[in-house]
Image 1 (cartoon, rainbow, N blue to C red):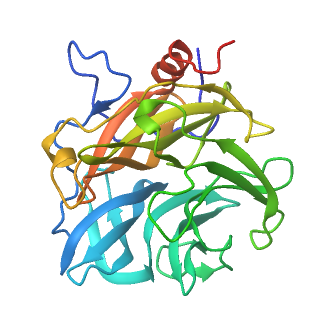
Image 2: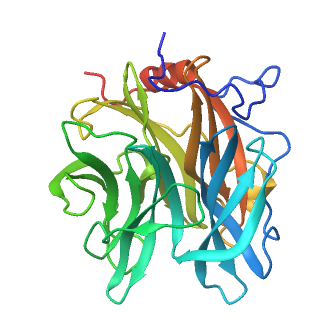
Length: 317
């Protein structure tokens, strides 16, 4: 049985699998948990990051305001489901990820530069003040996701190098750093392979350490006659060489099915950005953006997900 390597989280948000449901991931029945009006002058709130914080939860949320500028704001929750978001904007940019690393909370996000998007990194102890690092990579890049610990003495960062357009270059790479400032040893991880992800792929929540490898959720995009559709996939990578893929599902685990995923500023989007885990039970709670407009919540277990990946493994000989 697959096991999460990490801390217990007895108050993880959770809802049991619905009767008769056989999907690898199931949705919270009260979705969306955050709608587009949770902050003053918001156009939409989506693609957001969440971490445990003491006995509660803290988050950093993507806010597109009514000018359609992209900002990050913080939020607090006692149960990980009901949130109070703050009006103060902490950084300009979008699609944050959070991880606890070296005893601090590290934020990575897509930040704007004069030459295109880069990956910003900042750290906090209290979600009130932030220590900003140098941008991690050259423009243009998106989907910067830090690992929750060093591997081989180095920090690890997933990215997707791209260009100033929306879709060219659709591969996930991994970069390494001894100090969170100087990044190198870049390694290719995956390209789009199957139909559901054929346009591009990008890293999702902070990788989850398990006894089977790093469990990595990611998004994949297909282009149809009706535009893009974003879905969630999953893979397992080597614990010591996390750019090496051990198992990878050949199909999605979660794809737009509900109205709040179909209808919004960008229709047909499921975009995972955060995952909470409980090592004692193997439970996983996944936060995702719906239609680039709202925040949804879904659930799985490490055992269900690993079994599904292996049953649909494109890496089998």
